Image (spheres, rainbow over the protein chains, first blue to last red):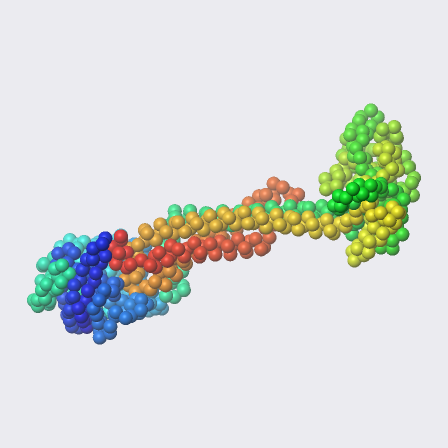
Length: 224
Length: 402
């Protein structure tokens, strides 16, 4: 599913070059459940951005489904992002003026799908995360846990193969956090490849495999 | 993205920021309304002036004494300038042209008129009976000057509406005597009220035979000779005949100026058209200002919606899609503002029409269309910069809202 070859990502900070990722090589198979852990600034977010095709490596290769992404033009990257990758963020990133349903429809809206098909699929996705009855609520009428569920519905509505979650429980109380983790684990059990960046060892240890980063390097790759 | 979805999304974004949307809408609306109001003012002035000129008569040719051309400044030139007066004989001679239909010599001046002790400064117009036909005047009562030879100084006069009302206590001026200087004349007719026209205030005028006026002002010359050509397409022929006839009478010296009503009309028309265009341009500047405001407010909107832009990109929106979304928003605003501006403009113009009923205010179609299109073009043009900024955003940074 994912193959990284000597991946580097450097940033220029002042006159200093910072190696956010330093020669990371990695293989992640289809359907894996991987947690990415490490202290702040260890490069885990940078890795997630590159895996999500929102950032490009300085050098090295990233093959997604055996396709080399480093030579893709921007429009193709956007399309790959749209069809194959689902994102969940710590702060949910729902559009506040849109209802839950409309938020879930966003990726299909961008893809140019017909309104009727969009509605049906967004309802199905909301049902799947257990929010079918709140489809017309706006984000500010929903609890934190519910908002993250909407975000998850949005992430899965295009039926991606890969889900990237950046601190998905960081803004939630522990009860809702556990529900969210249970939900994404269930999705993983149904075949979705799942990568979770987290600080929380309790969540990190639940994954089938844990990648620990330190100073931009893959420090430890341990199966649970 | 489907066009309909783009519109709904852009419209939704606008409706969620009503204060911002309202400010931009208002700016555009004021700009568009300004264009409409100012151009309709210019047009009203133009139609007013041309209407006034038309009311003077049709197919008119006007002869003025003197040459209104720049002459050379050589030492001999001063001697060559004779500036001979126009005379009644000149006027009479122009009848020889087959292209001339009506001829009226005109003498104008101011003098004190006296009716049984009441005195008033009036405009004296000396002419002949044909002048009424040229100007298409109608009588409120009585007769105009008699159609006799130009030389006859019959002791009669015709008075304008104001004079008839204010100088004759009986309200019946016909048959009464009116004294101008040492001359007395009997009032034979009263003109219908004419209102102010470009040439003179007819309502405050006393019209006497041309010879009488020459005697009152003690001057043998004429102020103008007004002629009417037989038809529109013979104006030029008549003009040339008149010039030739009078020049021959003045011993071959062309010391008169002959102008046609059409020429004057088209000159004024041209000047006032230019004025209207200039006004449109000035008002157009306010549209540009509105455009700059749209740009600024859109830039604020872009920075406020950084997170949303980042999200759209993460969900697979291309640079171009983000660009289109924001440009659509700006275009929406400008179009809506334009429509509101047109309504506002028409309301203001209707108000002006009520206040000044003698002028007809109608914004020209080109101004309405032009203002609308300029507003929309401004929206797109000034929307592009903020939209490009949004489109160029790095999705990661945008999501972190930095």
